[in-house]
Image (cartoon, rainbow over all chains, first blue to last red; front, side, top):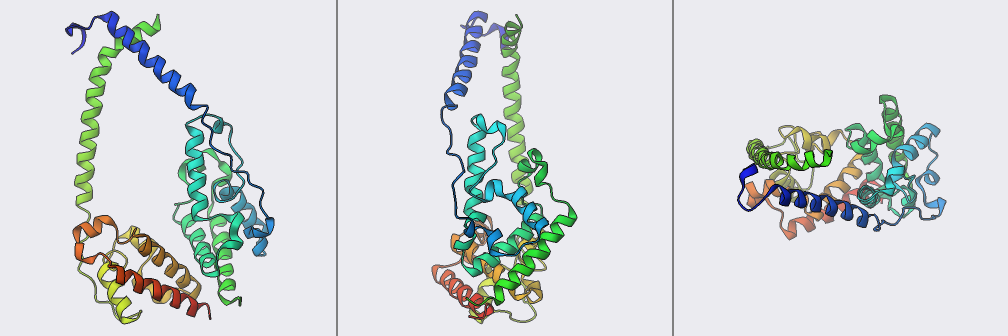
Length: 168
Length: 145
């Protein structure tokens, strides 16, 4: 180990060190050219969940603030989204989020899926699964207090009941 | 000059690399040890009364109740506890039926770990179809269709 290693002088080690540092720096610069597509589609507001229900203002505000960055077609990007690979991670979260639930596309879900999703909204915020820990760390608007969780769950429950008895 | 000091440190770093390999190895060993102690050996529970059509009840008892009933584990019960099925509102039932069917059809449930312990409790294609048919009919019924 260390100094006396056969065939490798201090000079060679120094050179290897510089090569590694250079390669990492070059890789970092190169990946900056690969930018994920932005999540900023123009959608029909009539398809959004806020159009489907008469939501209490507090509930609407909280859901838009805490969830829409990943669960809708419009993301308010943070400044650090300019840097890869952070931008890739964010794009991945948005893709995954929209796959499970896209509030902008609410009208496209059938009635039983809407009921299921309403249940899941209450469940995931209650057990702390959502919003993602990392997201909450960077966005104070996504922190839920007890009262907000109660308000949202009261609303999702009522909305699910309404859907259950709604005749299509 | 600082950078040369850093490069000198590369010698020390070799030791660090070795140390981190050992640490990661130890962590993995510890994790597999801890996880292997997760108890999945509860026998299927005979629940008080049948809540589902006989063939569905049998599937759930065999392949789901170990974790998703009162005697199961906390994490699974948080998502779904069959022992409390009767207490759910119709809207909640519709939601849970949807979740059950999603998990079953995608093959996420029963978990791979559970199946590796109990290979005979994996759901067959026919069983999955039964669950799908039941889920579709039952939620339609609950929604008054």
